[in-house]
Length: 560
Image 1 (cartoon, rainbow, N blue to C red):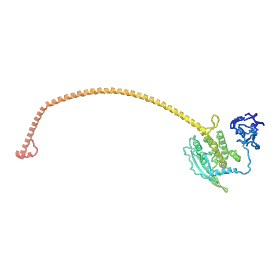
Image 2: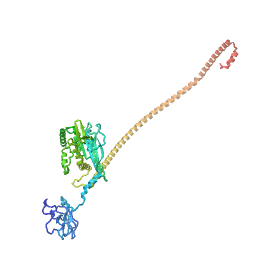
Image 3: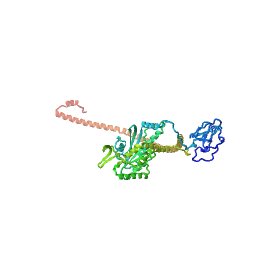
Image 4: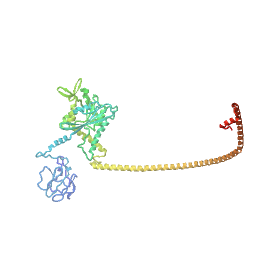
């Protein structure tokens, strides 16, 4: 198809470049029905067959929708951008279609309603649904122990939250989370207050911010895992992401501590930070003004991004713009009520006077409550989801390998990304498997070589020990032989000695008997002589005859 003669100006309608002068147009470039063809801009579309012949692609005789409907020919075909494309004459009964990119940038027209329809109740429906489901809001209170974090929460929500007072003896920073169900009118709020117990109490405060960052990331990760589930229940899921971080600054009157700067710098990309000066009644008004200016300048110079109240909504732009200039808020908390005039008001009683919590001339508590709860609570929730959570989600998915576009700047679908990651993972798995197989084969070869070397050493050692054993055995056999010879010689000498001894004992045995007999006879003679003497003496002594004495003595042991 021929290209238009001249490019249209920006003031012309987006379809004016495709209008042609009166007269019979040339034949379509694609006469077959349902075929593709290109228009003058290189765009592509589909032709539709007409009542009287073939079809083709053409951008002819386009008229805006505001023109009166045709009186003859086919019913005009509507494209996606509300442009009517009608045949030029009955002899050309085709209906030509152009793609919507030709009409890019053209807005929808306004159509008046002839009567009430009812979709104006959508805001009411949304409000009713939101009220029935309830709302959740999560506050993180960061600050040193003793700055009045719990007291300020009690004052903000006009209630008494249960909690144990923290001590200064904590070994590290711990985050304590408590959830409460609040009801105001017919609106329910699930409030979660997270306090940092032990923050700033350690000697080494270098890593005091890490537990806080890890806690915030853990809440983002839990929400991301819920989103990535196949069966999601986000409408009933308790959103534990931190919506607002109230950072309590000690009222020193000089400048921010390095711990405060480092912590806020680590948290500004993860949570909406609202800095507040706690216990602001501890310093004078002039010191407080200078302290605010000092804090603001230090935050700007160190690149700390704190939460700015939105000014894009005309209904709250003025008040939010005014309140942005009052940051950081100087607040005072108190749950005690004192009678001031004829009213009971929250205040703190001092010997020199009374400080009213809700008196804007005394502190910025009312400003904080207005901005945090009554005006910008929904914006804090929205900023958490659309900014901080989206940043975490994007970084997390990029770490996992998901991208919006490929290297050719073409859109990436989740399925394509999954397939690409799966193929990449399988490729890495096969590569690692091949590396492990090669490593296994190499180690097997090395082990076989080591075993062969050890086997060789064992054989050599066995041969050496065997030879040594044979030598030792030969020596022992020689020694045994010599010992056997000595034993045999000893036995022969012993036998000879015994023979000589027996011969000698037989020769000297008769002489010994003779000497014994002589000794016996001599002994008997001696005994008889003694007995005779004794008998003789007895006979003389008792005057007995020898025979009678002899017979009496017969009863006793014989003497002979």
